[in-house]
Image 1 (cartoon, rainbow, N blue to C red):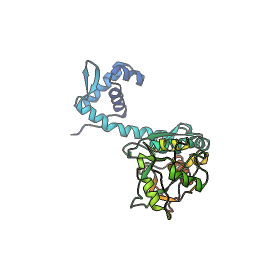
Image 2 (cartoon, one colour):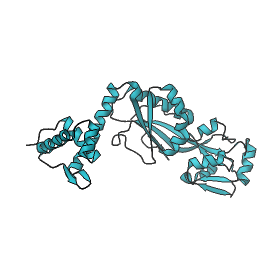
Image 3 (cartoon, rainbow, N blue to C red):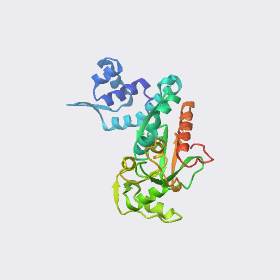
Image 4 (cartoon, one colour):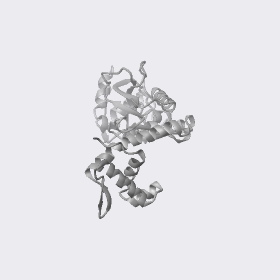
Amino acid sequence: MSPRAPSYQALHVFLAVVEAGSIRIAAERLHRTESAVSHQMRNLERQLDQPLLERTPRGIRPTALGERYAELLREPFAEIQRATALLFEPDEAQSLSVALSPVLASLWLVPRLALFESGFPNLSLRLVTTDRWLDLVQDGLDIAIRYYPRRPAETAGRRLFHERAFPVCSPAVATTADALRAELAHGRILVNEAHADEWKRWRAHLAEPIRLSRRRERLADSNLTLEAAAQGYGIAMGREPLVSDLLRRGRLVAPLGHDYPTGGVYELLGHPSRPTTGARDRVLDWLAGQLGDSSVSVEADDALE
């Protein structure tokens, strides 16, 4: 016969002990006595008829079974906390997590955080910056912005924003098309290692060929490449939306226009199974509007997954 499900309180205490690695520290965090926590753990092990904790010279640690049990319990407890915060905490306590690449965060979203704050004074964004694709469900995230080098085959139910690329430079380097062509022929070309072939692809897209200088400087990512261009060090390939803020502020200019669609797209999506909320939907709409202003176009079918 399977054991009766333990109480929420017992499991909460168990997770606290596993996290703290100490009965004493767990008791302090839970505002209980050590004897009460120890008693709760003994009762839980007796109910399950399995040892969950073991004492070591360095403190308390879970058994192999206890570690596995704690691992399986963490996400349900996190979901309970999120559900409680969502429905019962005041708006000022709400925080939404947004997963995106470090480059997109620093070049595009961070410059817009003050604007976000003015429109959402009772909300905060928790930025999860990584170049890995995080799973919204498994990682417990609210929103993700993903980049595809090529448009996905399946696009129904997605918000997609198309990327353009074009040469950009400091106004001190060139402000007219003719001046930029001369700089492209004789000046320094900045090569973004993250898109090493972008100059070749851009040149192949042109109706009329443009001579490109053999003077090349390779830089690790878009952050470094665009900042070097803004400092007048050379000519970079700017990609929307990453370059949009630098263009708006006048640190970079694009004398040849914004004419090259790379085929890449940004995807905006929300947690597929978590109940929708007014706050999250408003933030999704705000992000969509900001991406739309910074990119070529928005899909007509803009429903979320």
